[in-house]
Amino acid sequence: MSCNLNEKEETLRMLGVRGEADPQLELQVEEALRQCHEVARPRYVYGIFDLTFAEDAVILQGCSMRLEGKDIREHLDGCEKCALLATTIGSGIDSAILRAQAVDMSQAVILDAAAGVVADRTADRCEEEIRRIAESIGCDITFRYSPGYGDFPIECQPEFLGVLNAGTRLGLTATQSCMLLPTKSITAVIGLRRSLF
Image 1 (cartoon, one colour):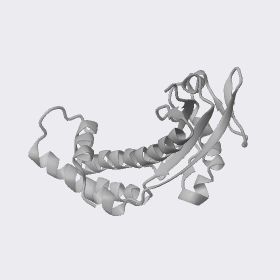
Image 2 (cartoon, rainbow, N blue to C red):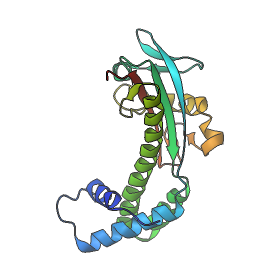
Image 3 (cartoon, rainbow, N blue to C red):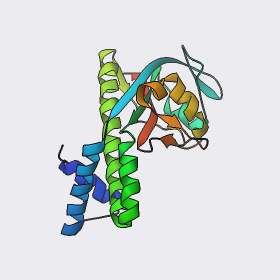
């Protein structure tokens, strides 16, 4: 799969490039994106849950998950449902980045940025699927909000993955410090609220 212009521009932005990029860097980014698409195995899972609101948390119906923190509660204010999503592009890119680090650290940095962009595009595809479901029931969606943002505790990652059975379905796990493995993976909450129009 070849890289598209948006992925290239986004990778350059992630690398701190503003304005015209050096042609050599552009070629390196294109090669990094080619490598990413070659080894990436994009997959995602999600679940949609009815919500009730407590003073200090949002409670998901049908499971034991409580979304704690003022920020996630504000994010979901006015929502009657939310989607939990987990996405990954697989462990192949982690191995590719490690190999690049042993040979050329600057190329490894470019590859890491490119992989982040490819991971984001996978989450975008999942979000678009959730948007279509939301629209079919007369709802709009919020933007993605991930554990670790604001006061939404990253420590919820293991339970988050458990609710979605992401270990079995995606091979996605959390370390003791609640970082995701494979590393180019995303978990997030999207609110569904009744459309005003």
